[in-house]
Image (cartoon, rainbow, N blue to C red; front, side):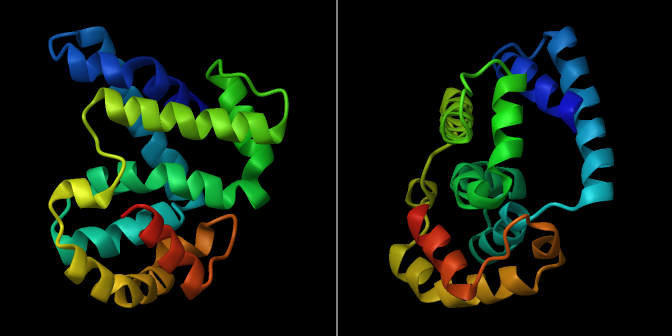
Length: 170
């Protein structure tokens, strides 16, 4: 997983911006493969659980839903996984003297990476109807809690936790 993370932080924007850059594309292919191997062994967590619900109800592509959700989930999980997030931040060259600083900088770096590729920070920017979204919060939370990916999340969320996370990305 570490190599996958390094490759994503080093090559994702470059592969996106320079589609003919074979070095960046090759490194993203390698990173993607390594990420797949890693999550096959460790699971995915609530970013994916919520992305399944969000994408299924509002026809948002799974990768896009994951990207929008990832910063808020990192923040949510930081109480239980903050040390790992600090290590990741440090590994990709972000200031990480403390768990809090590392987590904060990792969240910021993910948001910046998303923005550099035109990925919005909020679901409302994806032309989702607000009324429908708000009416679906309980159903999306229930679906996410039942999703197998939730079992491997470092912090077990409640129904209310997931509703709050989904509200925060509105």
